[in-house]
Image (cartoon, rainbow, N blue to C red; front, top):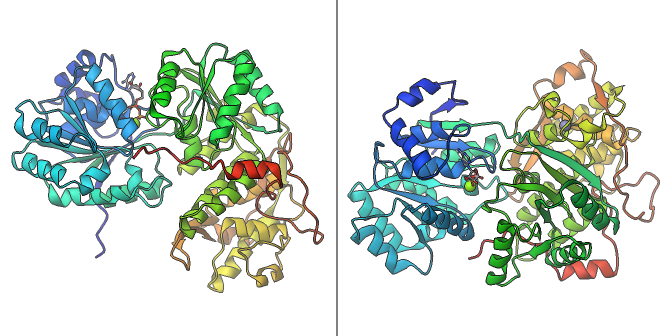
Amino acid sequence: NASSPPLSTEVKSAANSHGTTSLSLSPYYNEIMDKLRGVFKLSQFRTNQLEAITAALDGRDVFVLMPTGGGKSLCFQLPALCTSGKTKGVTVVVSPLLALMKDQVDNLHKKRINALLSNAETVGEDWQQLVKSENKPDLWYVTPEKLRDSPKVNEILSILYRNQKLARFVIDEAHCISTWGQDFRDAYTALGSLREKYPSVPIMALTATANRRTVADIVLQLRLKDHASFTQSFNRPNLKYYVKNKKGESVIVDIAGFIQSKHNGEAGVIYCNTRAKCESVAASLRERGLSAAHFHAGMPTEEKEFTVHSWQKGTALVIVATIAFGMGIDKADVRFVIHHDMPKSMSGYYQETGRAGRDGKPADCVMYYSGGDASRLMSQIKKTEGVTQDSIERQVNAVLEVMQFAQNTSECRRVQILRHFDEDFSKADCARGCDTCEADRELISTNVTQHAQAALTVVHLLQSRGDSITLPQLRAILRGSKNVETLSKQHDQLQQHGHCKELPKELLELMLSSLISYNMLTNTRRANRSGFHTDYLELGPNAQELLDNERDFVLNWHRNAEQPTKAPKRKKKLAGTESISAPAPRKGKKKAVIDDDPIEAPDDMY
Ligand code: ADP
Ligand code: MG
Ligand code: ZN
């Protein structure tokens, strides 16, 4: 049953479809402004908030794509309090993390807003407040699991629906519904039936993490119809991005020096990949006189709450945490986010760095990277038990993407980050807001037409044989790699094998990413033999003109100022033997420690 894609009204900005004037003429405007000032104590709206709120009160389905910290909560919390909208009653909010919901509901209670949170312990209460009481909550927060599994919750919903007491469904972090993303949540799939069960109730979906594919998936799965769509640039102009080489023990000295010289007395977050690392880094920083505390999912709840609380109050300034920390943590004045260990995906990197500078004032994001860390992370992922091969492959690819980002010192960091969200960003707009733009090194112009042709030819050859090729495989072939596990033997007999061996690494990376951004190559996601979805390269619409020698392919690039830390040399088997992935993990003691200190996944507290 091929359902046609739902119609949508694309509203890119306030000026586009309904201008500011018509917004202020809407029948809801006065009430909206009253609530903004009276209840939320805010003076003005941020980009797209008023637009999304107005569309919601108009009874429309709404899709909101806003960067972390952009203010998505207000888009559904405010209309939930309005009585002038086309639909009235309870706003049902679905969100993936209990901790995040608790946080929101606590904040709502402080504003004297009647909000209710349903979790495993509150079953009896729900019925009382939602069915019996005349004074029903304006917002009802439910976990996706409860919505899917609890007969009681579904009975309450049916009763409310029958009595026309459901104002709208709100799906926060809506990307969790999509299997494309890293955060796929099984229970979110069940949200697809809301439209069918409650056809007259509008749906609002919000997310910060979505490329075009994911957006389309969200719209399709939630069956949004004729929805108003509000998207905006993901650029965070007040954040500066730096990637630094990670050199063993000096990292702590570097971090402490950075904080003391640039962020003395200011709040920040340092991300580490393991619990033990969080504790040791926090301790080292304290030894150096900094106010630091650690946070990870292995701590007792009270200790976690105490730590978060003291950080939010400002009694602890630096929090050293795994990625269990952060989602929904509401602190506006975070002045720096440091990745002591590399993030596991570009989406993760964006989200974690996104916690800096939510107040719009300047903030720094520093990532420490080493090839050794990357390969350790990958081998850790490969050893994870109880997960499918697909999931492992997906995670490894995500790490490869971060590696590519860290090693690409030719391109503006912002350009690279935003490309991940399918956004074309102009380097000039970075305003020297990243390490590569700031470096302002000598720009080298190199004609790589032949190399680029070789790359396209490889893809063309394999495509015409009915074979598939991924970006890492293409890179390996061009570099003349002989030991790429995923490649079949015959590929190293290609004439193009090793054709780009002489190109500096950073130039090759730039060439490959440019081929994609110029639409000479496209990355298309398809299922492989085991059913797992991988990005495969295909020739893009502009490939032919390059293959036909109709144009030159000239790249402007920077030579790497400092080479990313080389991992220990492995034994050379054959001349020219090289691995596409980062070097093998370190042997011995260090690895053993890491093995029983598992890399931490987001804490979902169920
Ligand atoms: P998101 O869910 O998009 O990550 P939040 O809804 O948690 O963002 O909001 C981030 C921060 O921005 C919060 O501290 C919130 O109070 C603040 N905020 C939201 N809207 C406004 C506004 N119009 N003016 C000032 N601050 C706002
Ligand atoms: Mg949010
Ligand atoms: Zn830049």
